[in-house]
Amino acid sequence: MRFVASGLFLLAHGLLVLEHIAIGTALHGVAELFLAPWAVRHRAWDLIVIGLIFCVFDLWGTIRLTGIA
Image (cartoon, rainbow, N blue to C red; front, side, top):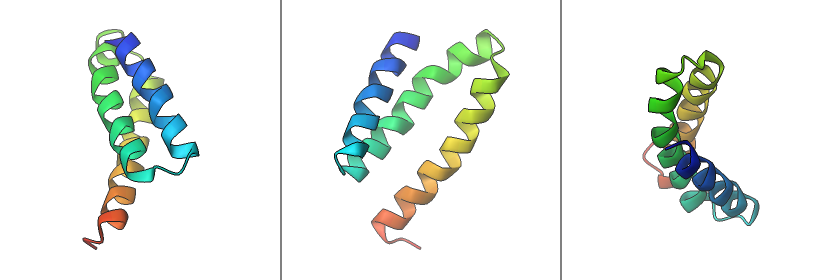
């Protein structure tokens, strides 16, 4: 799971740099879902807190991009 998440993070950040915002943000969120079980199992609280913060920003960015709010 951790390796899949790492690969998705690399791909997502590459897409964000290339200004493919919607796809990059979506992949970043999916990567966080793969990383979450590993982080909870190993009690990696720093990654859990960072994941929650990024989750809020990812949701906020997605809502702004789709024009819902």
